[in-house]
Amino acid sequence: MALDFNDPDLEYADLVYAYQSWVMAVINDHKLDPGGKALNNDEITDNAVDAMRFMAGDVTSAIESSLARVYDVDQDELNALLFPEA
Image 1: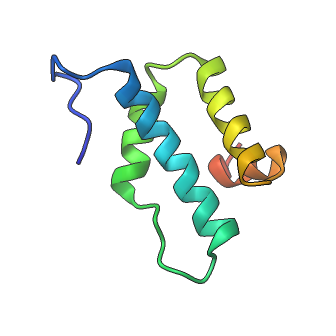
Image 2: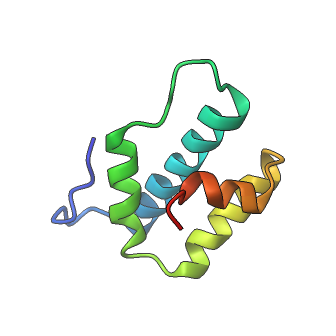
C-alpha cells in the first residue's frame, strides 16, 4: 500500500517503517536469499524514496548502519546496493 501523505493519521514512525522495510528487502534480495523470491518491489521502493524526503539524513543513515550490523553486511556494500548510481 502506497503511503498517503494527505492522511492525517500518518506518523513519522510510518516513514521510518517504510524506509526500514526497503533496506531490509534489498539486503534480503541481494545477500540473504539471492536466488529466492524477491521481496523488493516498485511499491516498497517508491514508499521508501517518498519517506526519505521527509527524514533527516542522520535517521536514514542510522537505519542503514543498524540493519547492516544486524545482517552482517558491509556498510559500503549496502550503500552500493541501495544507491547503485551514486
